[in-house]
Image 1 (cartoon, helix red, strand yellow):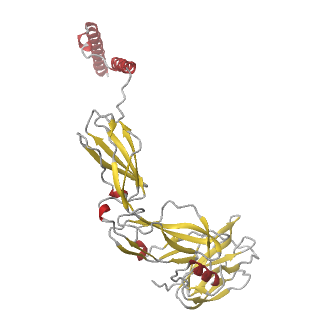
Image 2: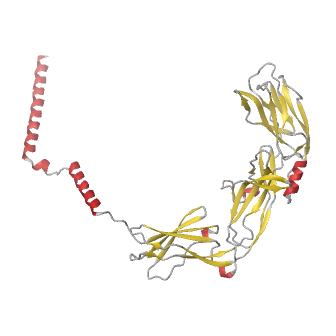
Image 3: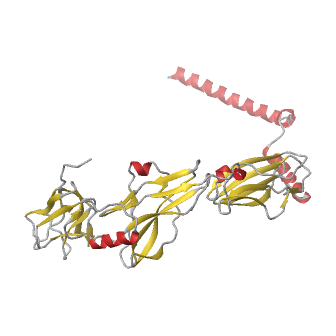
Length: 416
């Protein structure tokens, strides 16, 4: 929604006599309508005059965090956003404070800088000609020629000059961005250097998305807007086709996959843990093939961690010494054929460990000693004659003392 209110900010800081403050902008006019400008009031001696305030025409001004020096403000920043896509305006400093230099910066607003592009080198040249930072964001399809059911990963790469400042642009969550399964928190690859547009540039991951097509056809990813304070860029869209899986692999999960198996101790049935790893659709792996056995085998899917999913396999036979190897059939999009994979090592059954006889005897002895120390037979308290006579004697003595105290009390009351 178009804004119609100009925000004016006043600096409430200490005043020092003779402190000269300058008005600066991070670039020279004209300004592009879809970008922001950084406005600053700064002073060399470390004291920004508090009698000055910044206002603007055809621009919304919002104060940022000021920079301090020795506990006092040496620079105070604002970010300006333009109201319209054309026309003119001005940034003005008002107040009775001391100002070194012009108090007014007129400007002209040019049409938006953002536009669709297909040639990265040409876009960088256009930005340099417009005196704007040569920073672009471009999508990259990491899964070329995908099949139905194959996870497709798209990375939006940010490019900025090798010998310039570092940039960090985030995606603007508009309606188009919210409709995509974007991942703003992901494991980024190390940044690398590339030659682009005749210049050495840094390439750094800015955004990731993984989707799994369920039907063949054409997929179109719309352009996305990335930005930060003072900069905004439009990443071009991306289009690709999803191929259908041949009939012989239509019922198989899309790989590739590898298996790693190990047995685990169980008090009931022999159990093995099967780790399925790979860049395929792990959610589609639901069962394995086993050699024919006279006993039943049950497969239970477990947790999914990164590119690995765990399965618990139980065999209903107590006489096993070695677990049968599972076999996983999958469709490999790289070769366009069905493949099988299994565990490399033998799966020996891990028998429950038994305690040595000496440890068992020591445990039983300690348990018996603990019972004797913490409990006493209830019959000893009733059937022991000596204990009964001692308790009766104590009871009689207490009764005699209480009776004597009562007689003394009565006598004292009559005497009173």
